[in-house]
Length: 97
Image 1 (cartoon, rainbow, N blue to C red):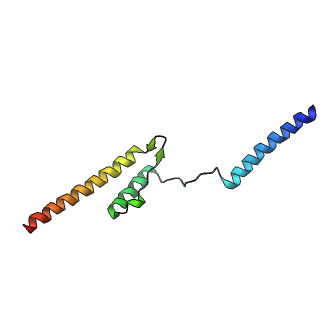
Image 2 (image 1 turned 60 degrees about the horizontal axis):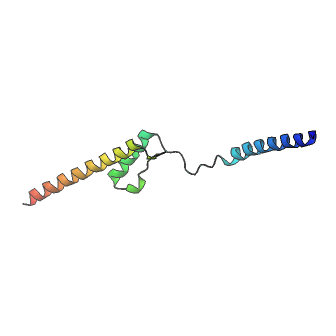
Image 3 (image 1 turned 90 degrees about the vertical axis):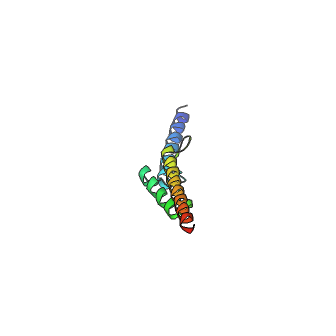
């Protein structure tokens, strides 16, 4: 009976130590690298919009989707860029007439 208890204790200890060693060597299984700070993410998104490279836009993922402040900031930047392009096209049309 005592040998069975000792066997279980040794097996539990080996599982705990093995799990810790495996996690130390291979990590916790994170698929993606952590994103920059939220303000850096906004700055990078603004720069990507200015360059016209929307493939570089990134958002942090939270439990119910993307961070709303980052999405709102990107939409404001896109709206500003669109309104300035519309103003330029109106001015160009007036100059042509």
